[in-house]
Length: 435
Image (cartoon, rainbow, N blue to C red):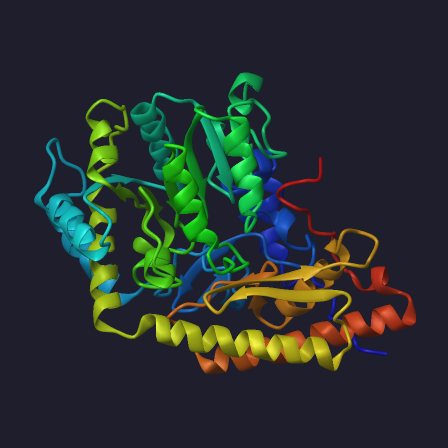
């Protein structure tokens, strides 16, 4: 029988003590659902981080992990990238918030216009939800329509989150104005546009999530948006700078009317962008998209440094190599342990996601054991990977060695019929619960 990991009471002592304190101070004990203790097997996992560097993060107990979520994706260059840190440090010496617009925000806007061939105007925000909500508001203003069709995840604000199982507090009248549509299904999108003819202000979508677009799909969406007078918005908070330096346009050659970027642009420093056609963007002269930190100079400085690195160094080639090795190695392990009916892998080298099923608990028991055994061997992953420029081939080897043990434990538990007994912590939870 495979040897299980040891008791975790000492390994995660500080994290669990901090969690007890956090339960009295912070609702959900985290600022972001996807970073909370519910995403890891509580009692057999870290809860709080202390510091990070390169491709690694250290928890409150001093344990080091190879960091694969990378703060939910923004750290394309890795933690503490020296070029980004130097740019921030220089800017701090000159100030980070001003009473007037800055030369630097103009320079970054012009640079992004040059970077993306379809972009003619640029506005800055602080997180992806700022950008998607601003783009939706602009689309409504420029079209005079209210209805939004969406595909993917687009942030926390009312217009979108009301379509999910996390819609508490969103008025029903607001929920009714946004309708999700399935990816890679042009007939379904066309049907919605016909049913709501003359009502649709915007089609907002992730141009690619985990599944790539079928041939002609994005071109078809572009055509339908034009035919129905709807603003096409690409939410590129994930795909931006990760699938191609020019995002979905660089990979697929389809230009949206507006695009939203975040995450990787700041490499961990909060900044987001709405950019696109002048005739749509110029409505921001009237649309209220205005907040104190819209031109925060630390984000502006970080973004400029990130673009410098992306222009100068083969970042995406490295990420592709690391991600490809991870995906190939993991698929080989699934085959080795004959777990194809229980565990799957989808996505692309820069972002790939594991799926778990067949355990009678929507795959969450399998996922919990998988994470538990990986964490015990220094691998932090929430069932997905966002490889960075800082990760190495040695990190891949260590990760796959740990996953070899994890899958061995799972295989043995399935064979012995005692899978649930292998879990030494609590079962992880899904962020978006089933209705």
